[in-house]
Every structure is written in C-alpha cells, then in structure tokens.
Length: 301
Image (cartoon, rainbow, N blue to C red; front, top):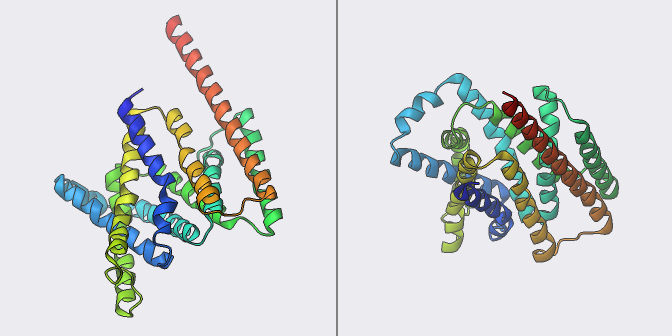
C-alpha cells in the first residue's frame, strides 16, 4: 500500500468532513454569494497552477474542443448544483441531512452503473439497494416529505461522477474547465451584489474576506488530493475511506451544532448504514473471490 496515496486520500476526506465548520463561519452570507466565491476563487487558483506549471498552452486547445466543452459544461452544472445545495444546507442547519446524501451516494452509484453502463448487479447487491430505498421511504414518511436535500446532493454528485467517468481530461484540467464554465456568471453575480451594496466580498471584516477567498483553496485542494490518491492506492481502499467525510459531518451536526436526531431519523439512517455495511462486505468478498480465481488461472498457465 502506497503511504503517500493513503495520506492524500485521508487528507481529502478529512477536509471534506470538516467542511461544515468552514461554511458555518460564513453563515451570515447568502448561499449564492458563497457559491459565487467558491467558483471564482477555485478557477483563479487552478488557472494560476496551470500558468505556474507552464501547462496553459496544452490546456487551451483541449478546452476549445466542442465535445470536451459540452461534457465539462454538464459536469459544471451538476457540481454547481451540488455545491449550492450543500452550502445552503450547512449554513441553514441541515448538516445531518446533508450527510445522509453522501451516505446514499455509493449506493446510487451502483444503481447508475446498472442503468447507464449495463453493469449487472450481483445477487448480494440487491439487498443493500432495497434497504437504502426503505430507509429513504421511512424518512419520507416520518418527515412528511422527501428528504430533498439528501437526495439532491446524492443525485447531483452521482450524475457528476457519471459524467466524469466519460470525461477525457485530467483532474487539474477538468476542474479548471468546470470552474471556468461557471466563472463569468459567478463573477457577474458577485459584481452585481457589490454594486447594489449587498456583496460580502471586500465589504466585510478581514477574516471574512480571507475565508471567502479561501473558499477556492478548500474546494480545489481536496479534489486534487483525491485525484492523486486514486492513482496510488486501490479503489477498494478509496471506497472504504469515502465514509470518513459523511461520518464526520454527521457527528458535527449532532454533537457540535446540536441538530435534532430523533428516533425515527435514527431508524431511517440505520437502514442506510446497514445497506452500506452489506454493500462493502459483499464487494470485499466479490473482489477477494475474483483475485483468487485470477491467481488460480495464472498458476494454471
């Protein structure tokens, strides 16, 4: 196991897990302005990295290709929706429900693989999907409405991953293009807010201004760390570590922000958690069996 890959993956998930603390420091600022700053400063950071590494000339012709631009424009919309809902949820007191979205996401990815890539589900994968659906249905019943925050986060990130699976560019180029697609609308909105006197950027105290600019760093850095980690360690390890972030978010919501976690919520969450445990165990056993079969074939040759 590559130690550097493990540290990079851990760093990415720990950063994502602590995100609620960062956005809560900015909870007095409208979520749309937080999203605008996140996009603008992420793009500025990524552009600076490409220029510093002298990769801008390589990037420009790739970014001007219509097919490539179309793929990343769709990815940009999906990740923009995800960022918007997440920031709004965290600053509005829905950290626990937002964590549910990222617990659901791995199960949704399995379902999307079946629908869009004709991946056959193993018999052991149907049970966790049914349990997750039961958990969402139970939460819907107890809430009196769909847990739309969790579902929007899960579906937007799930479809984002689906688009990225077909995306041709590297992580750095891809993130630069995605934020570049959203850059001008985000910049125009922030400029408009500043003109009408409601803008927070450069009209707040020093700490707030730094946090707004730092939104680009906390967005881009963990994504780049994650992209590097998946090249160095097995995806099975990455898959196990991905639960660090929503677990930390859930604990922050309950223990730090004192959000309500009622008995009905505990039942719904428990169904989803049980589904994840079964999915992981089934995946581990399937991978182990496949490796044993592969080794047997190689020894036979």
